[in-house]
Length: 240
Image (cartoon, rainbow, N blue to C red; front, side):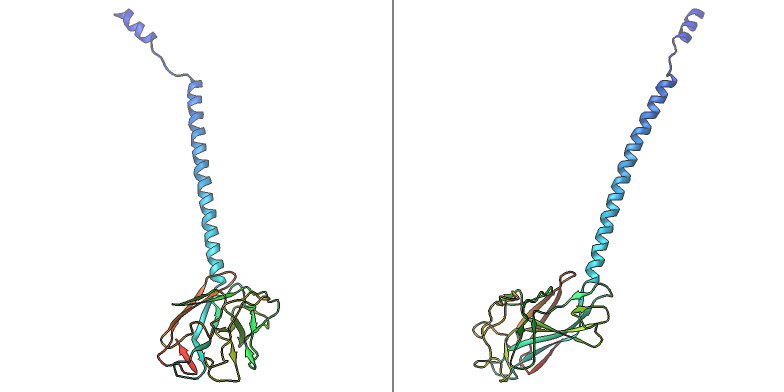
């Protein structure tokens, strides 16, 4: 029995210090690789989140909002031939931030026939028109800064701009813009590239019609204005 016991003691096995070191190093390497992967993924996600936040802030800082009502102008005739030849509304920046380029493609002199095309106009803001019968991707518009202004065509914080969207070409020598010779056909302007206006032979805005305007600056969100005309078209119509 003693010999058997001594034999069992001499048959015991264990691990050496070198094997322990190898196993420890393997664990450390695996843990390091895993930690690096986790950290890299976290940094990448943080960068993407930061980019998304910055993009959102940029959109907000370059956005417009309407101030007050939208005013529609007709020829002052309440008969079935009456129609809207322009709409006017005031805009301002949504938050104090980046300036918005409101260089207009047209001007309005208040005499003769308006609007007047601006030669070689490089405008950045587009206004489109939609109703149930038609879509005009780039209608003529003019701008007039009211109140405090820096004197340029950039809409900055604290400034207000009055935008006039021309749906028809108006001859100031007559009162009813839907009458004979009041509305002329509109074609694309080869200089500015602007196109799209209602024509006497097309579908004109009449009482109870609904229409939508979209103001699309170079950067920032699109400002959408949707209105419905009343049953009677007065000379000036307040569309809140």
